[in-house]
Image 1 (cartoon, rainbow, N blue to C red):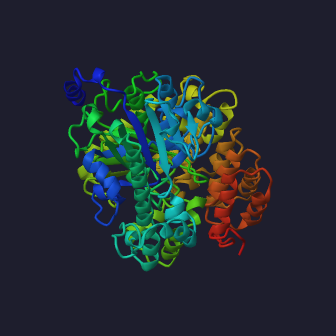
Image 2 (image 1 turned 180 degrees about the vertical axis):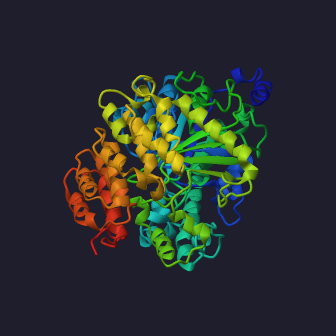
Image 3 (image 1 turned 120 degrees about the vertical axis):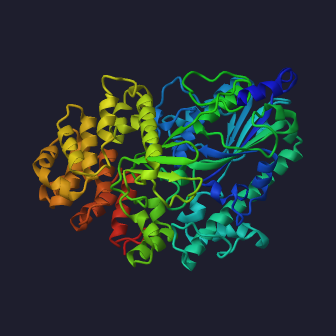
Length: 628
């Protein structure tokens, strides 16, 4: 119906129109709950709100990934991370030669393309990739460099709402870089907003959370200045404006977590009068509940500018002559963020969000250095330790369930997991089935451990490897992975049996599943775990060592973990240290971790995991990074 309406509106008009300019305004780390036009009366976002009133506001827009580089990988290529192998934050693996940044196709259609300035595309050979995609990519790039009457596609990335401003950098740094750039009348006080219920409502927490509102306010001011420049250059009436955030809010429980708060983003498209016929959603001020994600942006822009999207782009064309039928659900993904490994997959129909935790032995507040250095995290962990949190707030620090189901229409802060509610059994089963169907169809490459992706990327690409049914027996792999997180005697028995599989990745998921089991179910299988300690596939041996050490205080396992922590393979080292963050007795590893942190050629993630380990024990100051 959407495309039919567009057809009627545009009949006999398209050929008479010049091609539109396109301006992308992207902001960082922001959920719609903190934007005025999405219902937050405490927010001050008049520029964004006006765009929404005059344009089309989307309530069901989702990022493809919950941290910047994976989401930007999906945006620039039009390929979701779970197909490309780009879901792990700043991993930089090769992609097939036939996949280009979508502005490359716009250039071929005569558009001038500029990017100001963030790239972070999470792929190998990024410099050549950028040069191919953009006419200009710099902190001064704009539409200015185009030829006379040449249409442009210009991107402006605003970092004012980034997690560095809202939490990670010191409060003094925030004052210097955000607060001092706001007129006094724009500043939002600590008492001028409602706290999300999963945070403790204390003066210390309010002081930190006010940073979110003020950073978004500064962002709104910056967007206003850009739009004035567009008007000053007399090109606004020839320009379609897209506004969106790269993923959810950059605060604890949002960014990096595969729930609605990590995925859902504000998204607005503004059409000038000249191009209003291109909107299939109707008149200005319309609010659309259509489902869209970042996989859709590349094919939409290529189609809008007169081209045909390549076959590898499977996203929907949102507007224009070739717009796609609206879909009924989306598959979303969340993987490693910095040193915090994870794997979550999500299905949403817009109202319900169903997320599957495949590594639930880690809490939502898992250890990620960029989050740990923040004052707000320090307050949260101190309040948890001192028993000052309610049951909901404590849940952020406990192991996760295998699956969560939230009704976003009635529970926007995701406080009530409906997965165990018998009244929602039908919805749960439907979404479980849909998730399985979509993952199997995609042949999700991130069910291979990152260690494996690193190895195969030396001679090929993860995108192509996942299609190799002989070497990547995905149906069997997913069967093993689908057990992970479900706890019980029967599931444990199945996982122990899968430890004898000929497929190394099946064995990996069997042992990862055992990592999430209750100790009382694992205790009967010590011999099987000892045998797994000698597995020729290192990810299996490492995980077996972590279980044996944590459950049985095995000295052999302890020594194996110490050796793996020192590995020159950064993926194996990170896996080992990451497990140590969640074992009960960390004391025997202190000297090993201190030495590893000082070893040469350790990458950022390994060093960050070391710092998190030492920070847990109070051996480093999380604010300064120095030893106590």
